[in-house]
Length: 387
Image (cartoon, rainbow, N blue to C red; front, side):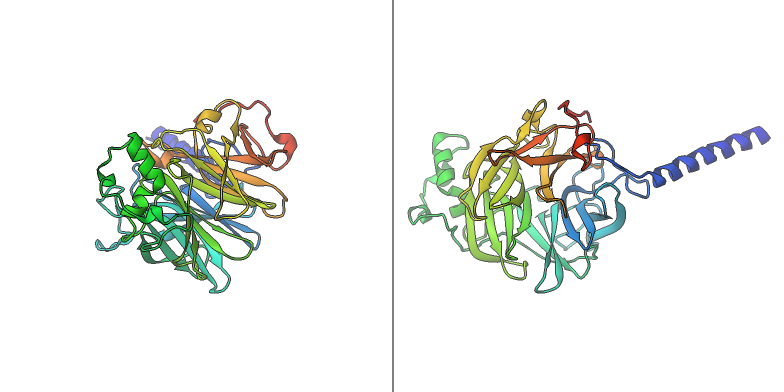
């Protein structure tokens, strides 16, 4: 009996020692694709993330995942002063217990992005919303507000954006509906031509445009833009938000009609706005795309795949979610992406890599197994990281 008690005592001691060791770990470098623990020793659970910086602190907002893709908890938030070591700040936006709520448990809450409105003093959270039991047919975007960057955020409402408003880069011909176009079969020449010409914009004009994968970008002048995949995920829309960041103005444009872009991540460097997106292959990775413009409302120039080296054709087994300008480090940006695991969504990993603007003014992303902000520590092997 004493031997058994001693055995269990040793096991308990070992578990305690391991837990304490995890809690005392201080990360000194980024390890793309590896399991990432917070400062309490738990796996970070914040997918499809957005980031916000204030007074020396970075905030990481992401989808709290269980084994499936449905929202069971809500939007998780973490904080950090060095981008390497993260404190769990809890749930910023909780799913509702009310079955009638749009954000009830079992709905889909994706791509949370938080921005701060200096005029109202409110933190504004936007996200892609799908209603419970409706699959992905709702294609809405939801908004919530808080007085604190860590929440709790109060849910306000959801939108199908730009109802009753034509895009600025639409001509008078495109506003006229062809009675036959709704019967065109997908992937036929007629359908493709009608799509580029605005088939789904016309279809959804009264109800509002579809909004799935999205992000929010605040410009230097304080104007905020909502960028989202629309038109059955075939075309990106960029919309100017109202001054309080809570609604859509009548100003919006289509970008890359029929280009099949999703997972937009926007940043600015010098006189140019940049956007990195992915293609449409479900949970499977694909080649990233990059674009550049002198105005958020375009026109946007295609720059090709920003990923370079081995694994570039699948963006190092990941999909874009955000590009973060690092505070107090000029021209320093981090490409942030998710390595999805559809068999166990909670085990999705994070791929963070430096973004370099090359001499031609194009963004480049190269794989490195381990890196930090000291350039000498960057790996030059360009090997595709394992899961």
